[in-house]
Amino acid sequence: INFFDIDEDDAMEAAASDGGNDQGIDIIFPDDSSEEIVVLQAHCPENFSKSTPKTKWDSVVTSLPFIKNPELLIQVGRPDLAESLDSVKAAHPEYSFAVGLITLGRKSEQIERSLHAHAIDEVHQHINFFHYAQDDILAKYQALIDAEAGIPDDELNFSGSLFEDSGDYGRAWVGSVSATELKRLHKAHQDKLFAGNVRLF
Image 1 (cartoon, one colour):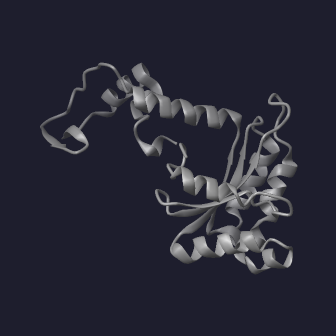
Image 2: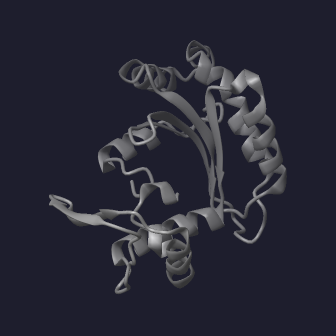
Image 3: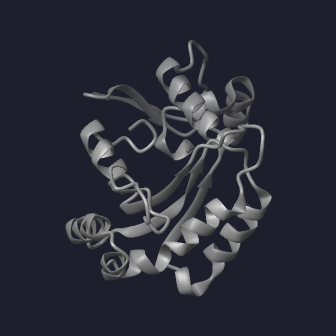
């Protein structure tokens, strides 16, 4: 709901696909901001201090043939998952796929290496692989908090002319800013400077 900015009902429906024999597919939903169909494996460990076991990533890799051919899900007794996948694909035929693992465990270097290998493999060139672990989730959450808080006060020095604009979004000033000025602002505010921008993630 928060990280992908999807409706609560849609999130609940997407999560309802979890269950036995899911072939590594816990959640399926369209992400309109990135124009991707997100297919993910979720993991909540008993011990939050340990690295996520690579078997959790292997489950993600296992899902790939079933994502490409949902008919296979029917053959293994999950027609509900096949229907969910088919309906999302039909509603968004131009969307690519984002496939990955979200875990409350710590980041695993083994998983990162496997993710990189899959990402550069030409067989999977139309799939965006991801692995969000404990620290990533905390950073994303902090970015959401920072975006709400904003930067209380600072001065922005433009290089040359600028103009003011306003609309439903509020007020804006448009002009050129030097790299030195951006460096100064970032040193003072770190990622809070960009927290309101979806690209920060």
